[in-house]
Amino acid sequence: MTKEIATLFIFESDSSPGKTYQTLVYVDGSTSCECPGWRFKRKTTPTGDRTCKHVRYVEAGMGNRHAVKMVEYSTPAQVPRVRQRSMATPVLEPRANSRAFDFSND
Image (cartoon, rainbow, N blue to C red; front, side, top):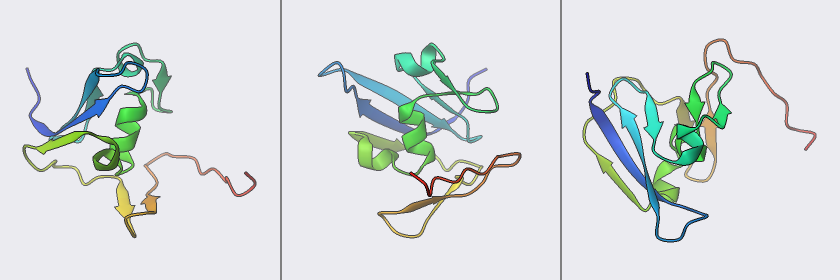
């Protein structure tokens, strides 16, 4: 069974000039990426889901700023977890069962 794609982002590789990676957002709100970071599970979320910097850009609402191309196929059923007050400062809304972190001492 294949999932319906809502949005495709194409990102350039930082380490391999000329190479690109496709990051997909599916209609159900899930994501995938073809980069090595996502494929080999180098980073995972607290819930155990795979992630990579490309997926994190998309989930933070910054995918269109970092991608070289974005194609929207259909609207995701799930509203994105990001609410933006302005173009410069995205505000992340908490997920269910998430922990709060205080970064004010950085």
